[in-house]
Length: 252
Image (cartoon, rainbow, N blue to C red; front, side):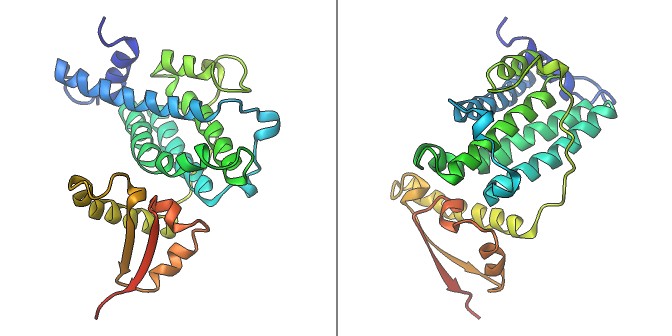
């Protein structure tokens, strides 16, 4: 009565049935937190698709912004992992892969960066069109991966995705082939994690509010690593969600 069927289904799927199965209020509360993270992920994607018309708003892969291509590649790796886990009946591995992607790659990285593109860029700007087309692909793909476990939520979300037909339970899993993560993006996320950690004391001390209040100075031990960041094809200020960046050489 308090949690609903999908949370109980997610608990059952996330259990490793090769070991003892445990259930308690504390465990179900943790499962409910995971469910809310995924539901809120779908809500964000659907919110980005208001007035989206696939007939005219879809963007060719070659025209996608580098960040959008990165998140679709990350989703391809997640899809392969979840699809293979379903095939092996290792449902707990599938749920871990999906939840991890929603929590880290989407909520922790992608969504934070694209908010300005969605809400501040011109309606027909190239990078806003790119990220909206990407959100459309992510919404469709996530719903199909979630359908076997989070049946009701996936069904309700599917009905709100522009341009889809039939039931989500009639769809096939995305046929995607994941490629290894590129070193330049791995370097970016390492730098972003360090920047966020450096900002936390300033947030706690109220000297800054959001990360956009911060001007950041970055020092890399190996100056050649700047080449990786410069090869991203995106503004580093935007990717780190800060007001400005100064580069400094490492001291010997």
